[in-house]
Image (cartoon, rainbow, N blue to C red; front, side, top):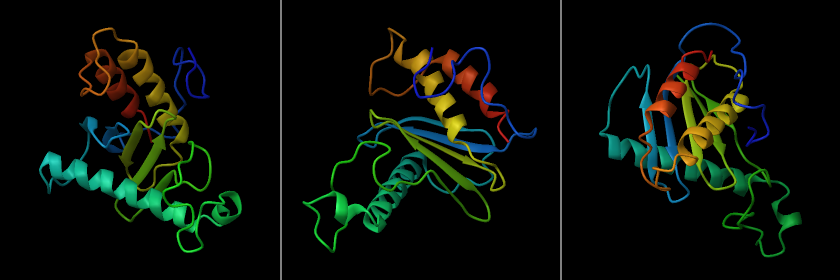
Length: 177
C-alpha cells in the first residue's frame, strides 16, 4: 500500500548504500509538539532527562522552520499578507510549499526531518556521513501508517506502543547507512 509517494512497504524498503548501524535516535512528534515516540539505538551521550530532551528537539525544529520561512526569498511575492520584515513567518503553508529544510549536518551528527500533511514530524539523528534519508523517512512514515494508524487499538495522539511497528522500525533503521 502506498501512502507518501514511495513504493509499497512490501516487498522492500529503499536500499541502504553501505552496511552498518548509523542511526543514533529517532523522534516522532504530533502537530502539537507532543512526543509520540522516542527510540535510541546508538546514542553516545545522555545529557538531559527525556522531557527536556523532547522539548529541546521540538524547539529546534520550530526555530529551524521559522528561520527557513523568514529567509524564503519568494515569501513576499507569494503572500500579500506578509510584511517586509517578517517574510512568511506565521503564514500557514502546506507541506512542500515555500522554503523548508530536510536535514542539517554537524561534525558529530546529521539530523534528517520530514513533516507529513497531517503535521506529524519524524526526526532521525544519524552519523554525519549518512547520505540523503528522505526516502527512508517516507518508508518509516509508511510503517507508521501501516502498523500504528491502521491499528484499531491505537488512539490518535497517544504515545506509540506497537510492538510490530517497533520491531519493523528497529530492523529497518539498523540497515540505514
